Amino acid sequence: MALKVKVDRELCIGAASCVAVAPNTFELDNEGKAVIKKKDGTMTSDFVNYTDIGDNEINISNAAKSCPVNAIIIVEVDDAGNEIRQVWPA
Ligand code: SF4
Image 1 (cartoon, rainbow, N blue to C red):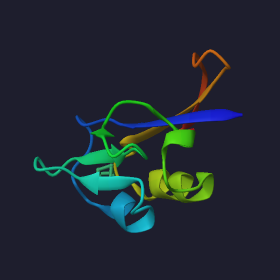
Image 2: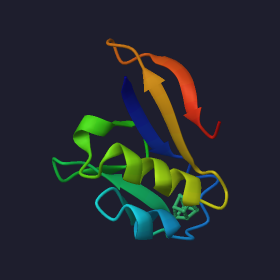
Image 3: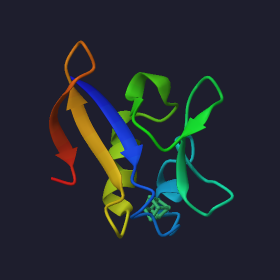
Image 4: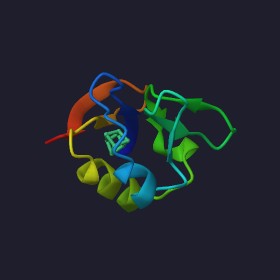
């Protein structure tokens, strides 16, 4: 199944546990909010396909579960990239 992940910047409190668990995926920006690092070198808090991220699925999942405010959202998408269901928070 294909997965996408994003950070809800309204919820993020900059606790950085995601950065500790999945440092190839998450980083804090200059506002102290988590952003997702893409393989092409760009960063965003919007949805990114797992195939564009340097960490594996387990690391990203563990990072999401480590967030104290559930600011990391994971969804399953179909072949066209449309959301099928929210995977995390469950
Ligand atoms: S763990 Fe959650 S609150 Fe902390 S920086 Fe990451 S997304 Fe933000």
